[in-house]
Length: 360
Ligand SMILES: O=C(O)C(=O)C[C@]1(C(=O)O)C=C[C@@H](O)C=C1
Image 1 (spheres, rainbow, N blue to C red):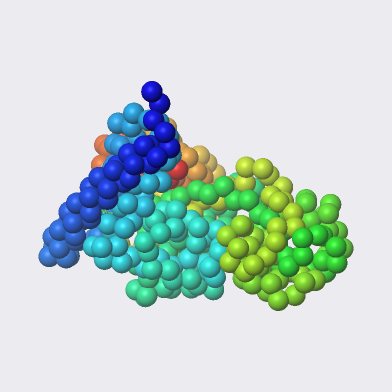
Image 2 (cartoon, rainbow, N blue to C red):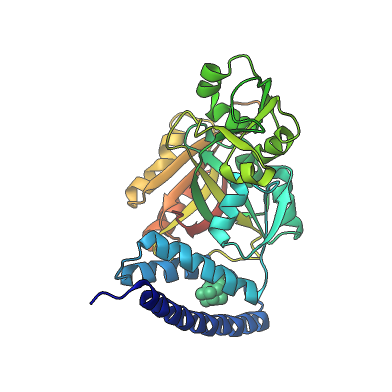
């Protein structure tokens, strides 16, 4: 005899009470961990431990919850437990409603203190000066390529990368009206304008494209002028009470942005191996034939996979470049350590930007 709705809800209520009791037991344990850590002066946030917890549960998960549900739920549970140990302040390009904010919440969970900033430079400053514990900045977009300012800041700043997260970025055309009639200007961050240039040329060829500090800032401004539209995500639309006049206008359907999570080395030492890690380095080589080829040889010799290779001008006026290289693995693995040591010997400049668990 199948149970009726009332019976099923009674059972759900009983399970919820068990869950609540179990979650509070977990939170009390996290409180104790927090006390231990305060005594030792060790970091509250341990991304490799969180990655292991989620991975371990996904391996044991018998369903019907999907593995991605398990990840989302436990990210929030650990965010709440972490906040009990000590609230983590996270800087990102604001205001509220940006994709950077979404990346910060997706990475740290929603139990964080928000530190919205007006530029990527300010995000780095906040995390360097200690007004934030962490910064979250975009480093690469699948349509537009690298976010050059972030890479330049990574090169010169004392911050290192401790995590990464990638978001599917869907840009909408947002405005006070529901139609495309009478739009004089489209406001967005230059990256978003570039990611939607095909759509704009086709549908709003006469509208001015105005670059602003962030997409959410554009949305805030469009909320005050019916002749303006903004390009931004849903979050910004609801934040500023705008309608979606056109859905998903980015030129590539699978437009993704990868964000780096950065902090001072004393906030969080390089994470221990999580089992699925990555090392980011930036190097420069002497300006001579074959030098770029040579730096890749140690990776091949030691069987280390390279997942990223980007160049940025060294700004010396001499056609010299910095190369941003990501390799798979963790320096505690002998073949990774040997490959990096051999690579370093060939470089005029060599800096490890970070070792961290590979993001989703
Ligand atoms: O294991 C720890 O070090 C904890 O502080 C506990 C916990 C958790 O909730 O599981 C919370 C914060 C850390 O980032 C990692 C894990």
